[in-house]
Length: 144
Image (cartoon, rainbow, N blue to C red):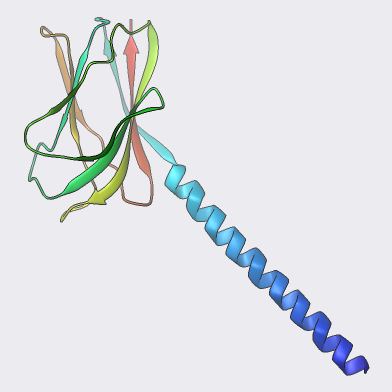
């Protein structure tokens, strides 16, 4: 009888350990997916930018989610050699954030959209790297 109780306790503890390990790894993976790495900062003096997003090098099937100030603007955007344009309207002074989440890295990872921020006179260009199911990339735009 005592032997059966020991087995039951062992099995319950084993099941709890398995459940905890599963929870830990699932939660840990989710945190990595939501992680964001700041890859640069650009200061601009204009407040009405046009933001263009495209694949600057080989068009190899990169797909991204594009966020501006934590708002999803383009979901599952396939990067091509012609840019997709986003006009956020008049920006307030201070910091604004572009975030890229990699959905597909194409044939050569990571997903790396080329981005330009312009007012028609001044233009700033940069690349943001983002990996599928992993670290997302971000860039801060500071409006003076």
